[in-house]
Image (cartoon, rainbow, N blue to C red):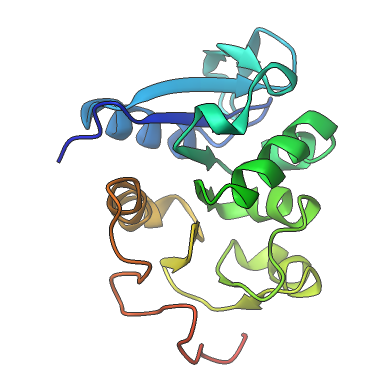
Length: 191
């Protein structure tokens, strides 16, 4: 599997969930993608466990058209990311352009604020289920859900399935998730 020539943004803010940044970072890099760490304006950010990451650029300087995909990690960072108008505009534009957008755990908050969930089927960390439903999505409790260009997962344990779906999408694969869920599928009842 090669993603040579593909460019992927990973959004960061303080208190990001360590695994949800670094697992995608290295998995995408291993597949040959060019990774750009996009922050809200500072140079350095610290994870929930104190691990640092430097941003390559700020959201206000990034253009969604320069990227094939966007990964939004969880932790407490999404609550800070969603407050930045440039981040919201970047995600809205990436969605409008049909770019692959992966959101895991609490990253669903960014999707809510970007108003890209109406009519979509998604998953997220259970604590924000009501937020995604109120933003117009249908919630399902699955390790990964792909609805068109949106790929969502619940928690760090879901990272292998999450990344398989992102890698497949970046290579132009099916809009279906490995369990067969597609936009037209009947989701299970919310829990």
